[in-house]
Length: 306
Length: 232
Image 1: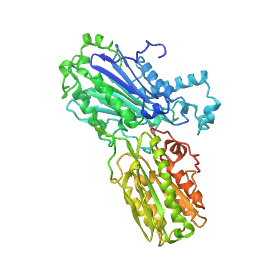
Image 2: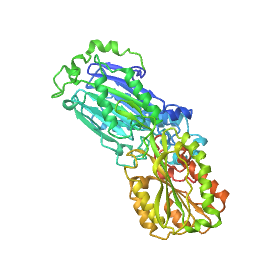
Image 3: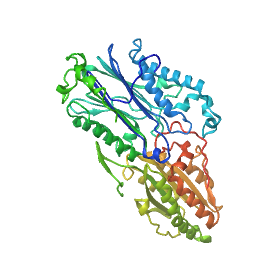
Image 4: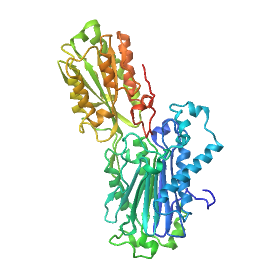
């Protein structure tokens, strides 16, 4: 974060109308290769203005040219956090501004830590001479939750799944059109063109939003399983809280089976609790009566990280 | 088809490692009887099985499944059921007949449909071994294979047994944009070596090397380089 209050990414958040729980586990293959986690997850809860929270999940590429992908993934979280404090950024400008912010962070890092001969000499490293940001290649899954809408943006693989109060789960962001084997990247020079967006009006807000790296989805034999899992996750909530043990075990299982780092942010949304009540129509959360209010939120934000 | 092992039941139903299908496509035409080539091929595949299993073990994100197609006068499945590599045993093949390579690729195209292929998985590895020239419509067979999603995404390798093998046809099977070339094996030792090399294609390291063909690794690749060249 630059010029803003530091974001504590080590805890879960719970503010009026929004609860965020995160989990991340290093993939079995990465452990075997003594490779660190290349995923990043973070959120920021905003206490002023219309924006309530911004949530970001990123998956640094394992491509040998992307030597700094873990840093690139963390920069996605930082750039997203910075935007929370920029009231001038609205609508679709939001995802464009995020890409610009990410590029600034990357370029700043490149000035202080120049690419090395070894990085250029790695397989395909000559591509870094054309596009040095490629070393920081990462995906990005982003959610910007405000009182009147939920804006989503995605570059690259991974999943954003929304579950309605009625239990219907779907992927609200359009599927990428490219080859299934290759992911799009924040590092592409045309990243602002390939970003996929979706905006959900408050009246149609899902109760659960799941942002997950492909380490989760790849653990399943079919593409329908992850939405089904998200729908089940709604039913595991009790006393108005996510069951952190369930989340953690789920992500651990996925990281073991898929071999890849697995990271998720589960976001519980009740915009009626955020604005006093009446905006969301035709959708009542199963446990809406237990959605926290501002009084209980203070306690929840000190919950230990898992 | 054999079911995936080690299912994990959790949210959303059972999880399962992705399958990686490895298929031998073997020329068992009459010319393979000469110079002990068919015997050498049988020995080579048997002896390469430990290498195949070891390579599969190194790929922690995949369950490697093996099948085999043979072609002579027509084509048939020699091992029709996708068999987990740990359970795979080689049953020797015999030679005799023409070289209907196109029929083999057409048969393989049927085997690349979903099912028997899984909806999701790692790119299959298809290894074509031949000592001669096709006696049927090779181009039509290849067209059918590449018309399938899995066939077009497969890592395709070729081994030329002896100098009479049609290198142009084998290169066409592999494709021209991958940097891969047919591997020439002119004697029994070279056949063993080539078969063992092809068996390592299920290992992540091999797949990283040939990533120019868009092979998914254990996790995502991004616009993979186009300069991978592999050799035994």
